Length: 151
Image 1 (cartoon, rainbow, N blue to C red):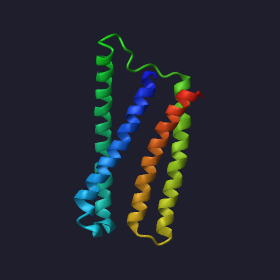
Image 2: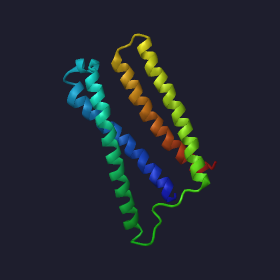
Image 3: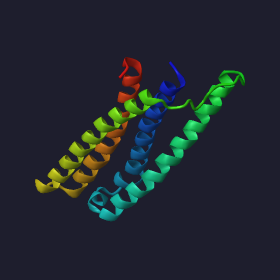
Image 4: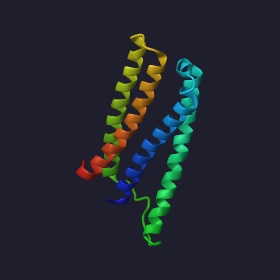
């Protein structure tokens, strides 16, 4: 497994862990004690706005720790931690992004459809968050798949 595949795998695991821990934190801290908060738009807005920078910062920290661990594992040898992206890498990324964007659009449509069907607003927010998370995971999985299979 080359360094790009390892980086994708680390990002995939980090994304899943971030969503699990953040979801557990929000549920145990806010929702479990007060289920009525699910209908509060201010709560959902804050949850989204807090999740985005937390996810970005945690991903950056995890990637830094990954780079340091690769350097230590290779005992300080000259390791190319950021190899140059060639046309194949760009094509793999474009294909994976295309699939994940389509998936997010389907999730967005389902979220809006839940409102059109008269469901509670919190259903829309959960579908929207889930579709973004699933699209991110699918993006990483397809990038890993295309690196393994070839384009």
